[in-house]
Image (cartoon, rainbow, N blue to C red; front, side):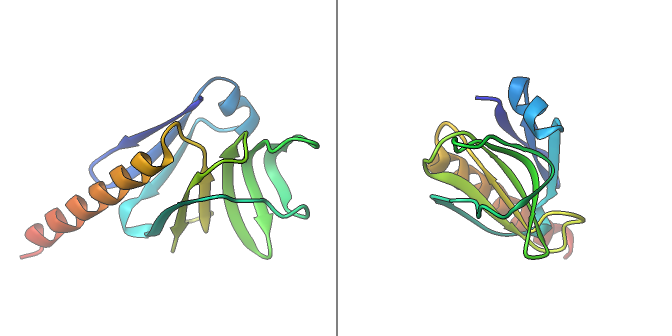
Length: 129
């Protein structure tokens, strides 16, 4: 699987490697913690009329990689199979409203993201006093 999450001091970085980065046409997506509204795990079916801008969508498969636009909102999609995916809803990001991607253990990934968000919020609260 060509995806890895890295937690930095103030942002989450989704790193893409191998063929995944080729199909996505990017190697990293940076998400500041303060822009993350919600993290969940669920199934997702991309609408057929999503525009790839740029990205890869292979007909007859579930493969979606890259940037897609639907109803005036941008999505970053990175998955190959119909299985539970990590879904992150964003507010204020310069491009994306949603990030939806496949990970080996999506439940653990979502848990780790939420844990880092809580720790970041606690640390931020300490520094503002």
